[in-house]
Length: 404
Image (cartoon, rainbow, N blue to C red; front, side, top):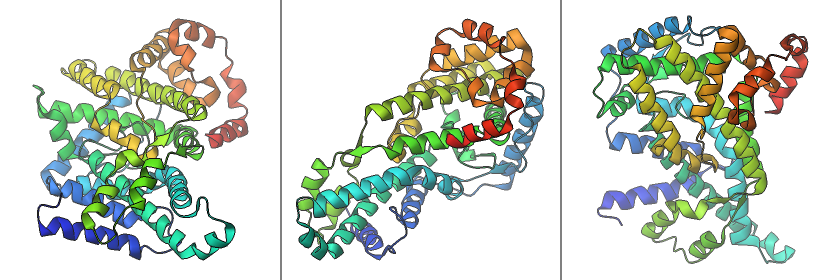
C-alpha cells in the first residue's frame, strides 16, 4: 500500500495525532479531520482565489440577488458574498459539520470502545482495563475522524457553494471558482451564464435559511435526531482491530480507511426520520428550482438546460451526495424533486407568489410526502387554511421549529 516513505510517514503522523488528542475534546479529533480534508483538496490542486475570480463571483451573487427580488417575497439573504477556495470552504463549514457529525461519531466511538475493550469482562476487569479502554476510544475517534476528513475533502472537490446538499452549512453566501470550473466541464454554455445560474441557486437557498426561522433548526435537528438512535455493527471492526499491530503503519492505515467497517445499521425509526427529512429537502430544492426558474426567465438563455443538469445531479446523487452519507450515517438526497417543484408551481398559479411563499411561515403548513402524490389536491385544500390563526401564535411556531 505504501509506495514511498512519505506515505508511511503520513500514516505514522496520523497515528501520532490520535495518541496526542486531548482528553475531553469530543469524539472526533477535528484538527486531524481538517488536516486530512485539506490535504485531499491540495493534493489535486487548490489555488487561492484570484482577485478577478473574486470580483466575478461577488458580482454574480449580487446580480442574482436582484433578480430574485422579482421572484419571491422573501428578502435577501446575501449580505457579504464571498468567493472561496476549497480549503476555505472546509474551514468555514467545519462548525456545522461538527454539529452534524458528532452525534453519530459519539455513538460509534462509544460502541467501538465497548465492543473492543469491555464487552464480556467482569466489572473488576473493566476497571483495571480503564486506560486501555481510553486508548481504544481514542483509536475509535481517530478512525471516525479519518473517515470524516476524507469525506469532507471529497465533498470540497465537488461542491460549487455552501448549499449544494440542501443544508445550511454557512451563514455566508459563497461560491467556489474551482467547483464552478468542475461543474462546467462538458457543458456547452457560456461561463458567465453558468456562474450566474449557480449564484441564483446559492442566493435563493440563503433567502430560505436566513428568513424562515424554523427551517434551519428543523433540518439540522432532523439529522441529529436520526443519529441519536443509530446502532453500529462492530463485528467486522472488532475482528480487524483485535489483530491490529500498532507497529505496522500499513495495517493502521488500512484500518483507518475501512469505511465499510463504520457503516451504521438503520432502524425503522431512522428510516421514518429519513423519509421526513428527504421530503423537506425535496421541498427546499423544489422551491429553489421554481424561484430560480422564475427569476431567470427571459434573462438567462441557458437556464432550462442548466436546471436539467442540476436536477440530474441532485436526483441521481453525485459523488458529493454519496459521500455525505459517510459523514452523518445517512444518504441525503431529495428523491422527489419533480413532484415538489410541481407543487410549488401549482401553488403559485393558484395563489400567486405571496401565497406560495406564505407556506414557509409555519412548519404545520408544509406539504407532506402524501401531498407530493397529489399536488392539486393539496393546493385546493390549502385554500381553506386560515394562515392568520397560526401567525397569531408566534410562540407555537417557535416551539415547533425548536423541536426540529
